[in-house]
Length: 289
Image (cartoon, rainbow, N blue to C red):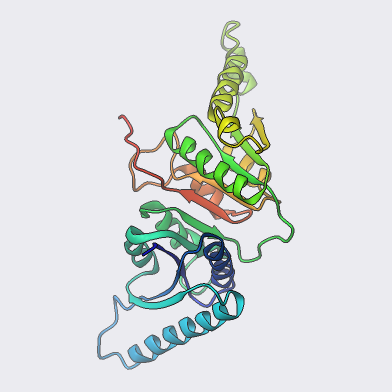
């Protein structure tokens, strides 16, 4: 049996958008969908008078989501699951057997369980499968796939995923590498080092190497290389993907410390999700100390 796309349901606008996106992807890939709601009752006594009411409310959310799914994509098999625990930990656990986890992006002060930094980022950090974070109000008419690279193994995995997505969807692919060149006052302290020029050239090579071979594998795919030499990576990606159908990023880059720590660029992007954003988790990559 095929692994399912698991979508987190909590009744918010973001989770509604996530369900719609997950259903469309499931229909395309011929996969089942699991709509999941977590009841965070870790601190509740079993005798708490509202315990059963909270469970019933959760089931109502799931039944409503299933009914909506049936109207949107009648051909997609949808199951519902009510689980106990925090949303982040529950989704992390189910990621071990899922094709993808899909969650909605939220306003920073959303009141239904915490902001995106409390939920989606936790899921992305520890998930064993790719995670898609969907903005509450996806743009209409969006096109193109954007992927961020930095020369790390994770970013090369992200390029592979992004290229496959772009080719399948008939989109153009934009590969972005961004970095900050040294401040002028720093360069002035260095005797004719040409540091900034060297950094630009080195990163230009990294960018070219990141897309090497794509033309052979996807001969019809149009690939754009975008080198940003004075922009923070997260800002460059958010700007580049403002009107994109999809943004793909690796979970960590060259500065990753451990598998459970989300890279700073990925973290910053997910707090300001510009479009449906997939964080890849293709296979484990070992980093040296």
